[in-house]
Length: 549
Image 1 (cartoon, one colour):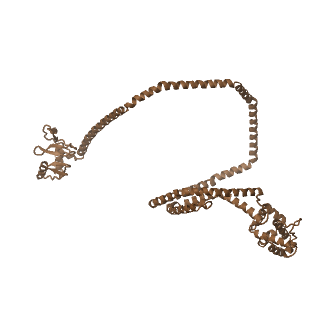
Image 2 (spheres, rainbow, N blue to C red):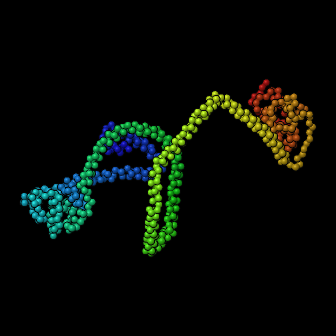
Image 3 (cartoon, rainbow, N blue to C red):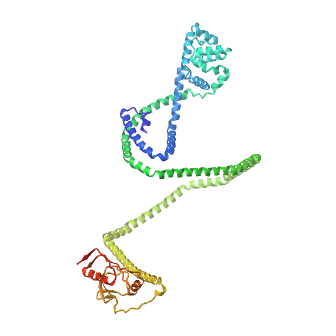
């Protein structure tokens, strides 16, 4: 951005050095950002081109205009022509691939030949005499370059011998004489018509363009300092930005490489969508060409064929609309407008009374508002303030009461949830037993009755009994035994099978080994007692974290 402005306005050495530093950072960062644009290169190029066109379009017209007017003013003076004459001859020359700017040197040479021929002797005087051209005007003064050029061209057009004409044209006008050879074959009327087709800028507009150019140069000079100061102040910001981008470029590059498949997929998706869109547009266009355009063509042909009738109908309808509008206006003017005028006059005559009534109504409204505000301010507001002053000190107590109530509710809910958990656990246990019993073969679906001692299940003297079995023992001492009562300390969560279930498992040979897993610490005496049961062909494996005693 600053390079663009700097190329036009900046002449400050410090600013240029700053620009070069910023530009170096920008190029380095730009290289990194360029890698980021692999998947969108075409779109970026299109956007860049559009931005360039938009940027240059703003100054292009002004620049071209100033350049054109400046050339007209400059070369009209160099060729010794009026601005109008220069523009006309330049238009003619450009029709044949030439310009009066290129002819400026030959025009100066023509003026020199005219000065030499003014004495009436010499080769130059002879050539002017052959053309019938006088180099001086009626007062004896040397003619202007424009007059001499017009007279010479006119004299050359009048020569019948084309070879001699071309030789004199080259001798007097050099390259210009050769380039304008087609003009010499034209009649004077044809030449004047071609001159008349020139787009001539008036002297007044050329003067305005010169004045604008001077002002434009002054503005550039003034703006140069502003841009320089702005550039110097802003360039550090760009340096920080470029340094930051340089620091994160590796992450950005890594992200691009990691997401390259996704970016390529996105690009392919967009291309696919565009291709589908083109296909849809083709289908739509074919539909329009096949079905819609014939309808419009037929309609157009019908309209052309019935145009006189349509025009007559439209004209009749329009005339009727005009007549109706005139009638409405006449009725409004003769009937409604007088009523409105009388009503307006009545309002005007009664305006003081109307104003008084309106003012009275607004006063009443104002008094009502004041009374209402007084009631609120003097009665309600003190009550609200007193209520707030009472509530404010008690807010912590109110908060504590509310929190206590909520905690009690939460405790009750938690208790209810635990009860439901126990109920659902019991239901699940019953369901599991029924499922197990139902899955047995019919021959094994028997009910065995075993002798039960009093209080065979439940808690006796602090010792749990599990004759009915359980899926989740609470832990602690329990009464078991196939040869008399035996105490065992079960860990919490142990499963105890009933006698019938144990016999079924032993009969079906589904359980050959019994594994008792104890999580936690057990007494040494209990450990020794359990291990002594090996003689009953029950392999016991204890897995525990440690043994006490």
